[in-house]
Image 1 (cartoon, rainbow, N blue to C red):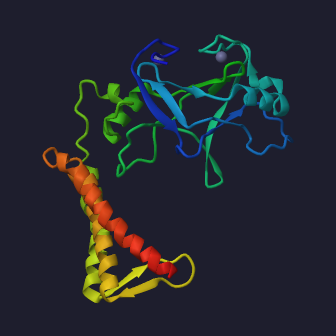
Image 2 (image 1 turned 60 degrees about the horizontal axis):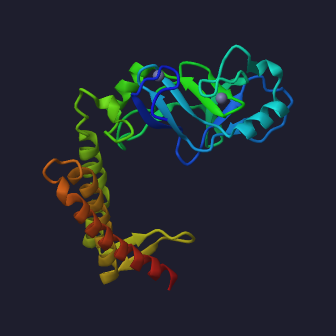
Image 3 (image 1 turned 120 degrees about the vertical axis):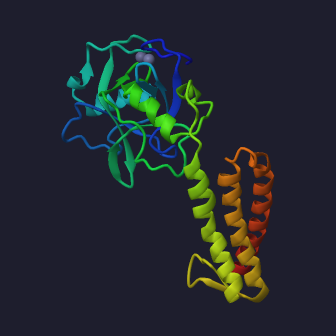
Length: 276
Ligand SMILES: [Zn+2]
Ligand SMILES: [Zn+2]
């Protein structure tokens, strides 16, 4: 779909409702009190969703069949809104509800999380929904709304420009990503590098084991593992610092590969050593 089904706007951005690995759930309103269900709703096929930067509509698709069954089995009729029309197929059989995500067993209201969110940005998540969620029993089209202004600002502040969210950056410069560069490329990268140097200095390198005490390598074996730790830090540095530096960027992929190769050899050696 390349335009908004509500306002026909074409400023669309891609995103997720909750973590990509765990699709959210549409929980219809009017759930019967004593109905026993496992999911308490219909699971979306994917967490991916689209939002319109003009009117704030957020939409995605539900398995219509499953939603129908769920509503018939577990809901009172009052959950259906006769007055609303599906924005996609204009059917009148629309259920109101909530979109929730499950996080460690706790159900939380979903938010729209635009694509390209930076790894070291300080925010609790995307933009909240400002309206009830609706879902069409005939075509499975599910929609809700968020504040388009807040969404635009969120993307400009916390996201890298990607093909999925490029329209939000029209007329503004994408953020420089200094947090990624300095926190990821220097701060976080220094942890394995520092630890690797410490291993070289003490002549002992530790490697976690699934069961039992950690493995303590010594001598040249310790050097192998220490170099692997340093290579891992170097990988982070090339990824986040070089990858964002205007002049260093062209070198980033090759150096990353080299660091990864060195690191993988060292870790591979330690893994083999763990077995034999
Ligand atoms: Zn729209
Ligand atoms: Zn529909």
